[in-house]
Amino acid sequence: MTTLIDGKRTAEEIRRELGAAVDELRRQSGVTPGLAVVLVGEDPASIVYTRNKARAAKGCGMRDDLFRLPADTPEAELLALIERLNQDENVDGILVQLPLPGTIDEDRVIAAISPEKDADGFHPLNVGRLHLGLAAPIPCTPLGVTVLLDRYDIALSGKEAVILGRSNIVGKPMAALLTARHATVTICHSRTRDLADHCRRADLLVSAMGRPRVITADMVREGAVVVDVGINRLDDGRLVGDVDFDQVAPRTSAITPVPGGVGPMTIAMLLTNVFELATRRRRGL
Image (tube, rainbow, N blue to C red; front, side):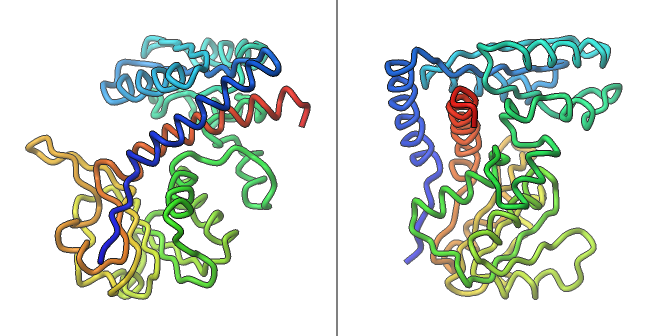
C-alpha cells in the first residue's frame, strides 16, 4: 500500500512546534527571532512567495520585515540595505527573494549576506560547511525533504538515491544531505545518458527537474520512495509535479503529491533556520 507523504500537514505541525519554541525563547530571554525579506521588482510569483514567508513568520510569533524595492534599484543600493540588515541586532535571518533583475549580480548579493544571518543557506561559506558536515543553515527545500523522510520513518542508510537536477538550490545540497545519511547518491541532469535506467535503480527518487509529468511509471521501480520537488503550472492553471502522479503512485511505497508535498515544507524550514540562527547568534555559537 502506498503512503502519501503529506507535506502540508507536516509543515503545519512544525510551525506549531516552532510557535511554542519561539514563545519559550521570548519568555526565557526576551528574544523574538526576526526575519527580514527583501523583494526587488514586481514578479507576481515572487510577490506571493515573499508575502507567504512574512505571514508565516508572523504566525510563529517571529518579527517579520518585508522590504520592497523597485526593479530598477541599483545593485549598490540593495547591497547597502543588506549591510544595514547585517548590522541590525533585531534581524536574525535575511532572505533576498530570487530571481533578481538581470542588472543585479545574484552571487554578489548572496555573498553580501552575513553567514550568521543567511536564512536560505545559500552563502558560499555555509555551502562549504554543509559539505564538510558542519553546522550551518541548510537550503530550505532539501532540508524539508529530509525532515519529511524522517517524520515518515523512511530509512536512508545504505539506500540507492537518485536525484534528478543539479541546481545549487536543490540538487547539490540534497546530495550532500543524503550522503550524510549514508545513502549512495547519483545526480542526474540534462546530459545524463539512459536517464530511465538510473531512475529504475533508485530506492529513493528525488525529482527537481521542473518538467511537468516527465517521470512515468516505467521509470520507477516497484516499492520505491518518490519525492517530487517540481512545481509546474499547466496551460489550464493546474499545478503538477515532475512525476505523473496517477501513473507512478501505485508502484511506490511512499510518494509526495504536488501540491501539498514538499512545497509547504520549504517555508517551514525557512522558519526553522531563522529560529536556529537566532538561538545560535544569541549564544555566540
